[in-house]
Length: 270
Image 1 (cartoon, rainbow, N blue to C red):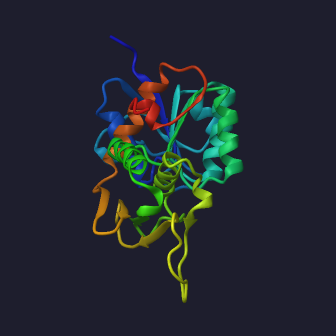
Image 2 (image 1 turned 45 degrees about the vertical axis):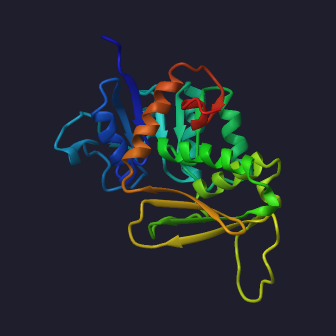
């Protein structure tokens, strides 16, 4: 029998952390080897799988180096500062990393690329298979439609706890569209509208953000032309899709030594 992949989970007591732990528990080829949370968390010392009614023997801990020494892979959906601190240790220990954290600056993204030269990383703003198929559809649509003939708006909605806006997925959608049309998003993006804005500028990509309740993640891209419009939408009803996509990324990384990859690489969508 093949030895299961030893996987550590960051943010183990959070909603996404628990979803990842549950997905690992139900995956025969993966084994939870460590569970991390921040110092001072009331969950420290508890069995990471206790919420499932199952005892894994893996206690939630805050010692990053000790936890990662027991793992071959880390899945991290925390905050940029925490992810980068974890990633530095991963690079030193040769632990491969799946990063679903969003809100990184360009400088921080460069740090991820540097770490990936030491141990392979899958870094994507959304690990859902469905979202990444949606990104491919957006790429094909943007290539087919004349840029100045269709106004593009990206509307995203998330729960009220989300701290970054627009979402990393919405930004990725904008990047994919802009690149498909031979341009750069930072030349076309409009993030705010208020007051007397004047007429919409041709070729711009607008973003609208909704925050409320427990919305897991809704994204719609509107291509509005004369006499017709195309809407491409993805709606997540749970975080299970993110967890399953993350485990696909782990299986992909098992075949890689070093390098920076995304979910298009994992799903062979290039």
